Length: 450
Image 1 (tube, rainbow, N blue to C red):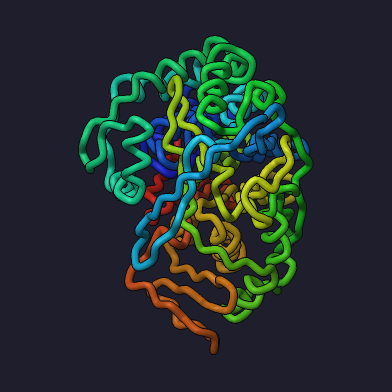
Image 2 (image 1 turned 180 degrees about the vertical axis):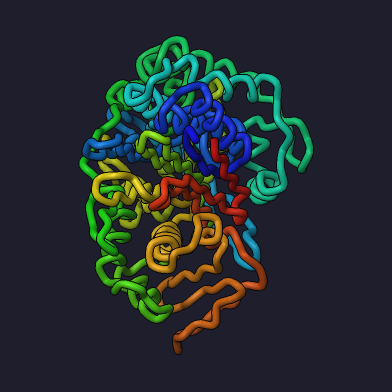
């Protein structure tokens, strides 16, 4: 076996698997898959998105590449355009999102892909090839992406998407050109070149804060991952200024070995979170046969509805979760907070479990439950992902079918497994050297063993 990959779309996973078959390592597979997700999951991520990648090279210390969204406004002057509110109907609830020019933060995807490629074996032009092919020739919209599009239909139309229903062919020629440009010229055009100029000038002319100086100043930041211990293993995850890894380690530290359901609820109550938003996010996990692991989570927020030169820009400045002190309270250059928690578990220095999740405030709980399912309960990766989940929001518990909570707090019972509970993509190396993967059906996930 050459490796295993789990991702939020079958074509995303297959793109990574193709790199593994061609002799690439886990990072090559993750980058190729991440760029393909820009094509196949266009309302969850994109070239105008941001994220975090945790790389654990075999026998070496892990590193976290922070290519998260950055607050703009270094050269802002004049009146800022108001944020545009839109209402999204999400099941039995409604959520208000804020989009438009003022919602756009400095993006990290092109820089993150270029930086990560240095940890792989393949040149960047090879890593973009499958993504560019799918963008140019088109792919059929699957059921989950059609559902996401139905939730965010006004943004999908505004961003220039042309296929909305399951089975329709989605062709994205401008995105194909942008991907080709990334492969040929690297990230520079998107930060200091003509693509950056087109984006910044359009946004500032429309009253947004993202200017040329913000893009020129952007850089990927390598960080030392947070570390926790569980079941004799080392758990490596996303460090500050992101919040997700800190919350996950707090939950882990509150857990005994072989935790009961009550123990899990108690651990999820340790850090206080209360936001239950849609979470337009996607995750990719890869582990290769040599033992290199790569875990990457990316997000476009809900998307701003603005696409320029093939770059669908994020709406991170319009996400209430990311601005707890009020919109535009971050200083220019601040990295925005995030719940994203790409995670790698090692045992005696070797990668054993690679995981992460989509789902906003549900990310940490999803990762925790799947991790416990594998390490404490001995479940194979796919069973661990498929098992019913719960989420504690404030003092209210949400549960999927199959869970009868041992709790006296108010409970919402879901009638079926739901994307509300995240999208956790997992790969594992068993003690006997067997690679296994788990793709989360809640968000259209797929796993491929090569």
